[in-house]
Amino acid sequence: MLKKVKNKNLLSELEIILKEKFNIKKKINFNTSLKSLKDWDSLKHLDFIITVEKQFKKKFELKKIFELNKINDFILFLKEK
Image (cartoon, rainbow, N blue to C red):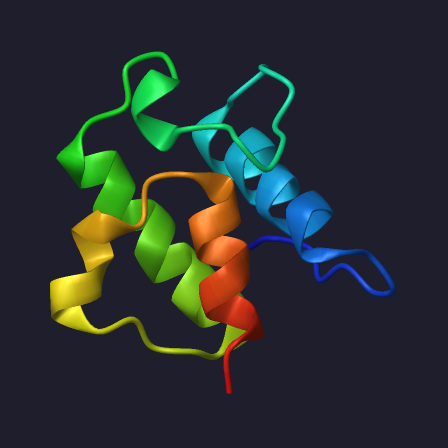
């Protein structure tokens, strides 16, 4: 189970998910494209989305899932509503 981060920004929280669950060692920033991560594929992408949904208690629309590629795309979506 991922630890809940308090008083951290969304970038930090997404970076923690990538490091803890997906063993990503690369430094993550707003412009990081998930496709650029080593061994990233569609299954990891879906797993990441499911993890983010659980962590933030927010659902992604099916048609939107594969439009989200950069970390900033996720941050903007999470800030909506």
